[in-house]
Amino acid sequence: MKNLKSLLLLLVMATLVVFAAACGTTDEETNTDGTTDGETSGSDDAAEETTLEGSVVIDGSGTVYPFMARMAENYMTENEEVSVEVSRAGTSAGFKKFLVAENGTDFNDASRQIKEEEVATAEELGIEVKEFQVALDGLTFVINKENEWATEMTQEDVVKIFLAEGGVTKWSDINPDWPAEEIKPMGPNENHGTNEFMFETIMEEKDFVEGVNLQQEYSTLVDLVSKDKNAIAFFGYGYYDSNKDKLNAVSVDFGNGPVAPSLDTIGLGDDAGYKPFTRPVFTYLNVDMAKEKSQVLDYAIYTMENAQDVAAETGFAPLKDDVIQESISYLEGLK
Image (tube, rainbow, N blue to C red; front, side, top):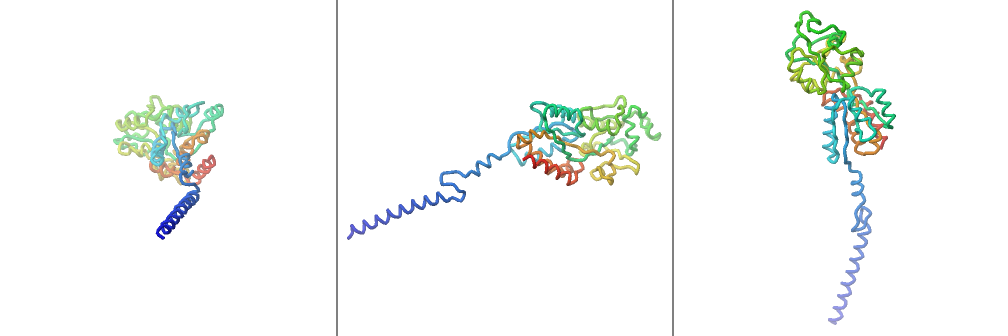
């Protein structure tokens, strides 16, 4: 009897072992991700494939530089595997780096629109270029903190200072009550779109006054004006906004009283008091690079999605929603 009981116990245990093995097989076949035990879900591989990495290379406008540098910093905080390199050779110098047969930049920032000859170069090289407005800027005239007489000027007078034919060399030439001291006009050099905007649009392609001090670096202009009470320089509003402790801005009378440049007055609408000195600023995208490199396209989309916030943070007037949405729609279509 004892032997019979032992035999029955062994049979029950054997049955349990077989049942457990069968259950293990069933579990392996019915994992929730559709894989068997020992296999890896394809979702991990897909995540690795879509991870953004590599570099984005940007050069161009010194005026747009603070905007794009902030944008790049924000982007890299969220995308640690992507390196966004932002330089500021100037608009024209930047286009020369952008429009090359090989190893050109992915973006060129510009404080003016692309020129016909630059468009022709792109076509010759087979480079598809797309223009994006990113913000609005106000051409700002800055003076030394000790200059308490020239805080307000008419549009005509402030432009005359920089014109060879303007006939203005001393402050007293503008107003006899002002000091009979020589004016020191300054601004960015020919590498910069701001120089071209001043020359082509504001000065109507008339020559600069002899002796105008044109510099490559905006920081140099800030330093020069801050140390000379007779200096006056022009550049984008953002550089003034970040140096208000060192400089004053000239309020310009366009016919309806003096208007100080600010984020509220800079704009292209009829209600924008600083409109005559307002201009859009741009970035230009190499579309082929955006199609080839996912990080370039992703950065372009990120830039337009965040353009309004970053513009206000860096001394630019934001664009309207419809302009932003049109750009985003185009970029989404490149996916």
